[in-house]
Length: 115
Image (cartoon, rainbow, N blue to C red; front, side, top):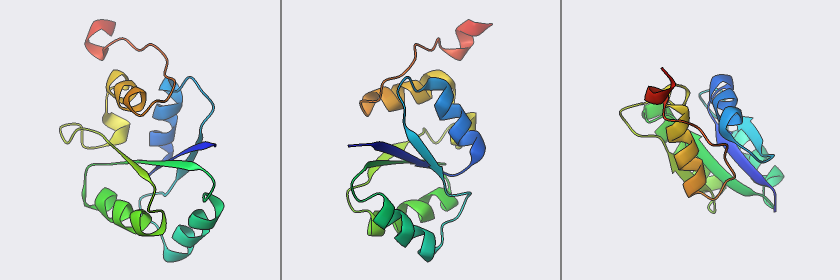
């Protein structure tokens, strides 16, 4: 079964690509999601293992609610509220989130140790 991660934007997608060590399709909602797009993804992804990682804000919560109705088996991944956005979450934290969800991730040093 193919793994798919839905994120909000291009920067989020690029951040995940930096830590993933396996091929994963990453789809972008671009901050909002229409009924039509929700239904399209529900059909397109019915045979996939779908994960959702969006920002810890109101927009992210709206996307979670919409997709949860259309894709009831979706796996919800969360960034910590202190980082608020996926794009600003340190790479080592994103790697931990993905590793916990059984994705293969690259070894990432904590960002404090990089300097």
